Image (cartoon, rainbow over all chains, first blue to last red; front, side, top):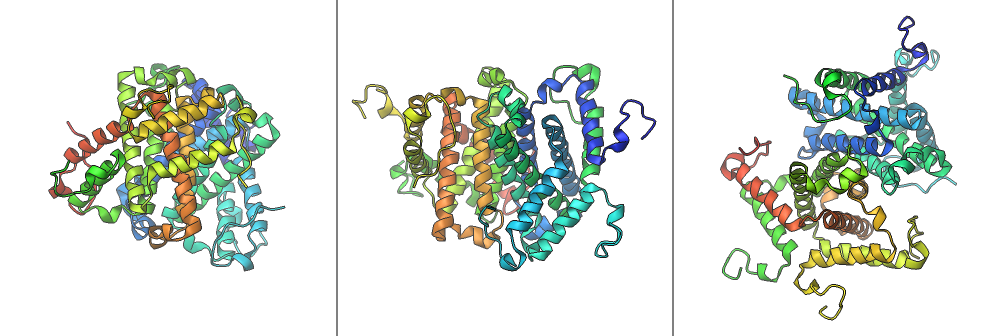
Length: 130
Length: 130
Length: 130
Length: 130
């Protein structure tokens, strides 16, 4: 998007950065920034995750595994996940956290903490890394 | 990563796609795929969001707004957000949902639903789109 | 309720026990017991708590403190809390846990763990009891 | 407790009322009332429910159904449920909501909304009551 003008550095942002930018503009256009405090956004995220959980609560493991084959339920799940992503990206933007870096750092820690041979097939909580 | 061999199409994936791939490998290396059902992952996501909420629960709005200035709390918030992203990406991967598309679709809907002039400054729930 | 017949021991139950009994009858009358597994009920509880959180997410601390003065919002909060209680009581009933005993045991632990003089006015996480 | 002085009406309270009173005293003794705003307590409740969900996330339906047979897991579940009850009772106390009344009102509504014959054996969302 080199010619967009409004955000000259958009070209250097990843996809999540572009979404963060669009959410920022969404809030600014409605003068809703005062709602988007970390505390409020964390609550909004929890609320949306609650709605996502509710889509799965009465399904058996088998029904849950094929939920996307049901057009109506699949549409609802996609919409709830979309809400979760939007609030998570907005929260990270407000806090100044890079979502991908945060996830990769945590994954790298889990890779060290859970030795594949030792934990093969059966999860149990590993002691924290020293 | 053109020479990785294992995932010849990684080059064409966005950053989230690469993270999804890495999480898939993490689960496969430990034979943990049987844990990663949609129902279980949605619960894991809810659990991690609960831990994130807990970081903010006793803070005033002002304290929450500057939480990243506190090195210890900031590190915990970043770690919890990393866990949330990891489970969200893994869930979306298992369900076959594109997280960015889902968020953009939901945002486009909100842009139509919340007319900037009409909702300026004060949020209230809009009626669903017809 | 000595003459109810169906539950001769209701008279000896506390209020929560009577609610648990009524929820049991509600599920039985609809043949919904197969939905009410611990895993499903814990998800239903998380979903309802998410709806409760959503009632508070955009409110300032001051607005939240007087939410019950707003008849509409107050009615929604009361209804969401009612749902939370119902699923919590049902979950405890299915698991065979006495909710009051569990809360009192946890409170007794916190009373020992947080010395009033030492933690006066400022919360911080205490080390676990030895 | 007729001679406690501080709460002459404790004798007339139900069990939940007595727990609410004890939680009030717990907060007062530590001067923690300023933390116990509705917004903060709703977040604490969500955090504790997240921890409860986490106890069940990797269990199969069968394992979850017998979780209380495992002494360690059972102890953790009981402790998490105790925390959930404590924050729920404290929240209701601060908001001035009677938990039992709220649950009974919601249950009465569900009893009307879900006709046993019509919904027998299979849950689906009923339309709201008119």
